[in-house]
Length: 418
Length: 160
Image 1 (cartoon, chains in turn brown, cyan):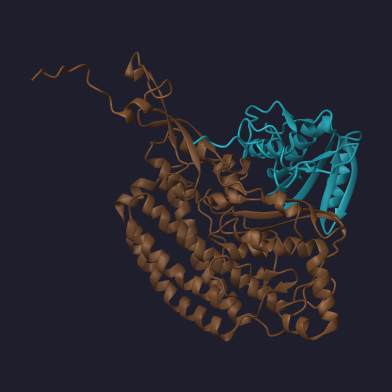
Image 2 (cartoon, rainbow over the protein chains, first blue to last red):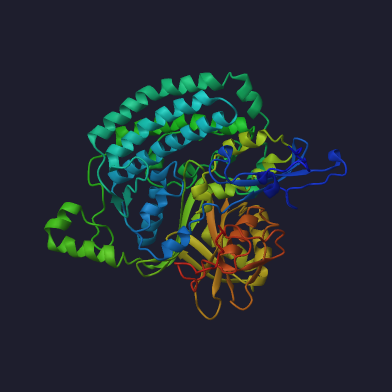
C-alpha cells in the first residue's frame, strides 16, 4: 500500500472564508498600534441595537463613535400619513419600557394643538400612568445596570416588582405592554376600584422591596467600585450636549419639567426633584433609585386626590364619543365616523409639548396644516440625545466601564431610532 | 418675557429678525438664514435671556416654491425656564445653513439627523454623516416627494 503523501495542512473552510483583507492585520509593533473594536449592534450590554465603534489603546478607550439606525422604522414619516388618533399605538413602540407615558406625551401635544380641556379626573389618571411608567422603567434601568456590572439577582427582583405594575396596566386598559391607553381629550376607559386596590397593595410592599434591592447594592463593594467615578461628564458638558432627565439631574442641574414647565396636575402634588452633583454612573443610579421613592409618593397623593367625574372631555368635533353611545345613538355614530375617517380638524399652527419621561424630556413637535393628518411631527427623543454623550463619558475609561456607562444612560433604542 | 426677547433681538439685529408668531404660548421667531449663528450666539450669551440648551432641531418640508424647507431650532433657557423657537427658511436649490454646533454641541447630532432626513447641508459641520439611513442611501425620506412606501431597490438586499 502506497504511503499517503501529506501535502500542506489543509485549512478549514471557515478559516479560509474568514481570512481576507479586512480581517488579516499585519502589525509592525504590537504595542504601537491602537485597535478598533466593534461593539454591537447585537451585544447584550448595549440594551438593544446600539452599535459602538471603540478605539482602544490596550484596555483604555481613546475614542468612541455611536452608530444609530438599526431600529429605524420611520415613525415621523408614518405620522404624516395617519390621522392623529391612528398614531397613538405607534407611540407605544418608542420607549417600550414606559409606553403609557409616551401615550400621555403625545396626546398632550395634540390637545395643546387643538385646544381641548381635559377633565380633572383624566388628568389625575394620566399622572398615575406617568408615574407608574417611571417606576416600571427605572426598575428595569436599575436592574439591568446592576446586571451589566455583574449583579444578576437585582434584575430578577426588580423585574418581579415591574410585573406587578404591568398587571395593573392589564386591568386598566387590557394590555400589559403596548397600552395605547390615552385618547385625544381623555382616556380609553376609566380607572377602577380594582386598579386602586392593586396599586395600593403594590405601594404598601414597594418600600420594603426597594429597601431589599438597596441593601444588595448600596454596600456592595464590587458594584460601587465598578460605577463610582466612571462615566464622568461635567455640568457644562451636560448642558451643552442637551442632556435631560436623570443624567442632567445627577450633574447638579435641578431641571424637572414636572416642576419647571408643569403639565397635567403636577403643581398640586408634592414631590422633590432628586439632584446629585457627582455626575458619574453611580450618582445616576442613585437619582433613578430615589426618583422611584418620589414617584411612589406622587402615586399615593394622586390616588387620594383623584376626584370623581368624567374621564373624557365632551367636545363633539374633537374627542371620540363613548363606545356605548356610538353604538346606540345617531349623532355619536356620525361623530365617530367623521373622527375616524377624516380625523379631527385642528387649527393651522405648530406646537411643541414636552414631558419629563423616565429617560428625560420626551417632546412632540407638531406642524399642522389644518387637515386631519399632521403635516410634520418631530419626536424629540431623550435617548437619542443622551447617547450622544457616550463619547465624552467613555473617553479615557476602561473597556469594561463602557457597559456601566451605557447602563447608567439607560437608552432605549426604540426611542433613539424612531 | 416674550416681549423682552423680541425687543432685544429686534434692537440687536434689526435686519435679521423677521416675523414673530405666538401660538398657544409657543413663541416662534423667523431669522434670516445668513445670520442664524450670530442670533443663536447672542441668545446663548446674553445674561438675561441665556438660552443655554438646544432641546431640538429639525427640518420641515413645506413643499412650496419659495423657501421650501424650514429649519426649526427649539431652544430652552434653564434660567428662565422658557422655550423659544427659531425658524430659518431654506430654498430647495441651495439647501445650506451654517451649523450652530459651535454654539451648542448638542446641535451636531440633530443637524446630522436633519441632513439625513431632508438633505439640508450644514456648512461647517465637522461630521455630517447620515444618522439613521445607510451611508450610500441616495434619497431623503422625510421630503414630501418621497413615498411612504419607500422606493424599490433603493437599498440593495444582501445576496444569499
